Amino acid sequence: MAPAKIVIIGGGFAGVECARYLERRVRPDEAFIQLVSPDAGLLYLPLLPQVASGTLNPRSVSVSLRRVLRRTEIVPGMVIGVDHDTRRVVVRRSPGRELALDYDHLVLAPGSITRVLDVPGLQEHGFGMKTLPEAMYLRDHVLRQLDVAALRGGLQEDRERLNFVTIGAGYAGTETAAVLNKVCKAAAERFFPEIEAGMVRWHLVTHGDRIMPELGERLGAEAKRILAERGIELIVGTSAAEVTANGVKLTNGRFIPSRTVLWTAGVTPSPLAAHLGAETVKGRIVAEADLSVPGLEGVWAMGDAAAVPDVAEGDDKVCAPTAQHAMRQGRHMGKNLLATLRGGRPEPYRHPDLGMVVDLGGRDALARPLGIGLRGVPAQFVARGYHLMALRTAVARARVAFDWTVHGLSGDDFLRIGYGDYKTHTIGGFEQSGCYLRADEVPRVLKGLGDPD
Ligand SMILES: Cc1cc2nc3c(=O)[nH]c(=O)nc-3n(C[C@H](O)[C@H](O)[C@H](O)COP(=O)(O)OP(=O)(O)OC[C@H]3O[C@@H](n4cnc5c(N)ncnc54)[C@H](O)[C@@H]3O)c2cc1C
Image 1: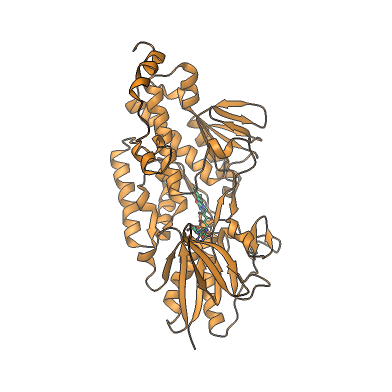
Image 2: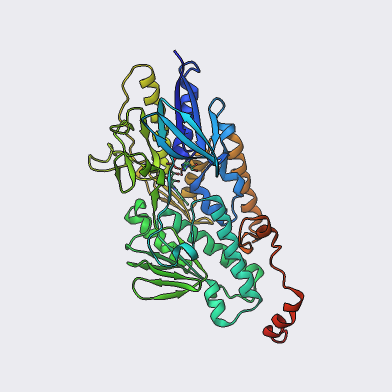
């Protein structure tokens, strides 16, 4: 018999863990495994705020797929369509360059994207925090506001530039606001005497009244205390009504002048989830507890893109979109595929919540491993230990540990790469070849600038 063809869509936590499990347990004559991913690395999203803060280098948080997976065929591209009748998927490698893959088993793990609500101006002026370029762009942009505000700028302009707003107080938004606030304050103190620390204002906006509800009451209150101590204003019970180039209007009517509005108010499943004709709930593909998709034989779903019953929590609950579930579902998926290939029965996924870790920068961390609340250095120890364990290669672990050590010893140089200065990702955009004035424009522009200070 020819080996079964298993196609995994998505090289994130769930997809990679599944392929890794299969590689170790399934014989080559049992299955041929392909994994489709637009990127060559598994992006370790929980450490993304630390890329934005400059604590970690971008390359350190992307784990090479080719280093983790030896036998799986990695297919670079995006799956843009699935035809379950013929059991084929369409992969787009680049526009106009598509290829088809056949499958016997299709594993859907395309994750989620930022949930952009219908808020006027958000698409044009908001910043996201879901990809490596976004994290790097945000860091650059924030440091640029300090650079420009320190050089000159009227009072109003400085206030706009030095006001930063994060909408959404889950772990992504809270961690990012906390660490970038710290970066701004440290940069102002060390390199920009013109900027008083009090001029830098971070605001964290949430529609509820809690931050990171997963932390529980006590640690959530502790997180609030740390943010307040650092001068981050928590604005509860509201959200963004409109975002403009110069600020954000909240639904409670308040306007915050700002050039930086970070939007982290939730995620929504990959649009691919809606393409299959499978039932969805809040956009997530409905899966059985054994991760199979009902009505589509040979199709399986997991991770952020799937609504998997949370058997450990109760009948009506679905698993939260977390890395913890995605990794464990990936491994469980591997087990169930192996059982199915060998004529066995797939088992329901069951995983009790092991808690969470939050790094707010410096020594301020919070952790709730197995329900035990920790704060400060012990929490940071647990948080960092957990991340090192969860990174899948020794090289990735070494890179992250090295970055933490160097950053801990030498601090930040607050360097910008220059991303924020580019308008587009074309050659002309990156090389800024279109930014020069024509000779006849120079006198007019100089006249408009007035006399030098
Ligand atoms: C800033 C941030 C911080 C976070 N912190 C934590 C935390 O501390 N703890 C925690 O548990 N969780 C955290 N999360 C959530 C966690 O990262 C996600 O729940 C987890 O990544 C979900 O895993 P996944 O495999 O479903 O999706 P992902 O890890 O997102 O992987 C999806 C993969 O599919 C690929 N893909 C998408 N569409 C297609 C397509 N059409 N074709 C092919 N490939 C496709 C993507 O490129 C990606 O590689 C955080 C998330 C963010 C954004």
